Amino acid sequence: MFGRRAAPPAAAPEAKPAAKAAASPSAASVAAAAGKSAELDQRLSEIKVSVFNDLIDSVDPTELAKLEPAQVREEISDIVSEIISMRSLVLSASEQQIVIHDICNDVLGLGPLEPLIARDDIADIMVNGADKVYIEANGKMELTDIKFRDNAQLMNICQRIVSAVGRRVDEASPICDARLADGSRVNVIGPPLALDGPTLTIRKFKRDKLTLEKLVDYGSISPAGAKVLQVVGRCRINVLISGGTGSGKTTLLNCLTRYIDLDERIITCEDAAELQLQQPHVVRLETRPPNLEGAGQVSMRDLVKNCLRMRPERIIVGEVRGPEAFDLLQAMNTGHDGSMGTIHANTPRDALSRVENMVAMGGYNLPAKAVREQIAAAINVVVQASRLRDGTRKITHISEIVGMEGDVITLQDLFLYEFQGEDSTGRILGRHKATGIRPGFWDRARYYGLERDLADALAEAHG
Image (tube, rainbow, N blue to C red; front, side, top):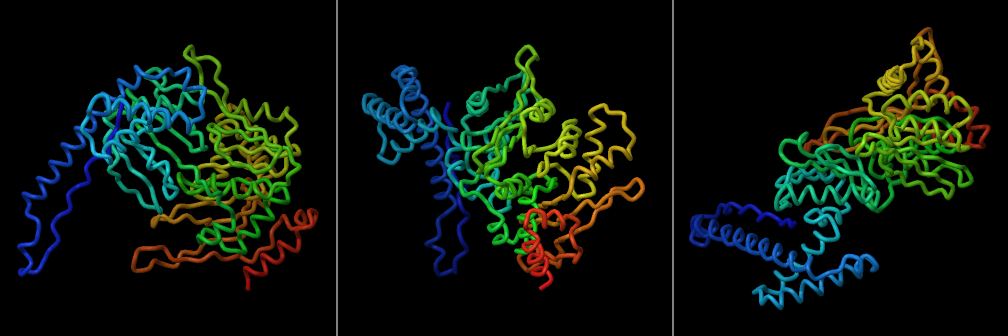
């Protein structure tokens, strides 16, 4: 199965002064050039198919499996070159390189998506069927000229991705979460649920690991706010990171885990493992979908309940989305300080309401006040991440839970992002500001010897 890049749309002739009108390309010449490009693409596509079929007959998969990936690519490149020569195919040097490169990508990589995977400025790749591939780069969505030959090729690529992590996607199980070898998060939804062909979504894994310092450089948080988050990470405060889709929750969670001591035993629970913890003592757990007979499923709740028996010092849940919320609250309340998780919500208050609803999903018939008391006792800080309408990502709230007033959980904001308007290009203008409230975890910071760091951060915020 092969993919190709669609011919880039012909640019409209640029307006010229009347004296130079004769030099402008005519509509006929533009159309002719586009036609030749389409013919070339079609010819190369046919050559790729025939060469690929010969390649399959020429190689021994068991022998290739013994080689390193770079050696396999080199071997396949040599065989493809020999096939082109033996078939006496008329190709220019550049065309031959295109054929070799695309076939290697189809056999070993992700076919037409390989150039996008190689780019580090792309945050998301969204494939809506064979002929529509979108990317998000620099906070903006754009349509690319990347295309698959057909939906069958796209489905083969999806199968290759999910089978690498022991999962499957087919008509019986058309929805699947997986990950690439570099840790990028993958979601596949295929027919019959996806009506216009398989839909593949890849949340790219950045090669350069983001840190709080880099988030400060990007303007996502102020220097003082970043120092407060460092203290939060180091003095074992239970944190819930809230935000919408694509707001940077997992990135922020990775940043906070950098401040966990190297001698702590950390257990992570994820649907698709993507956290990048740097500590040496980390146990990574991943959920498992049911098999063909519908048996063998291991849910997030199963993982959270089991990791309590694994002598964890910190428990990190990639995303809290169901009844496992109750088990995580229990863990936070029984000595596993410094546990962290993310949740989909638009505000810190909404995040707490969602946790309450998730506990109810577990079938626990508990009074609302009792659940809220558990939440107030377990979670210390809620950090809100948001993706603004100009594509930038900001930490808009650092909020602390300070207890209960009647039946209501009491929150106090320590840092807020204040919207101030937008510039002529549509970029959002604003600033992070401290509210001036002394954190309730001040004594905890003193216990860990971080009182001075916290005081300096708050003084800087007011300076």
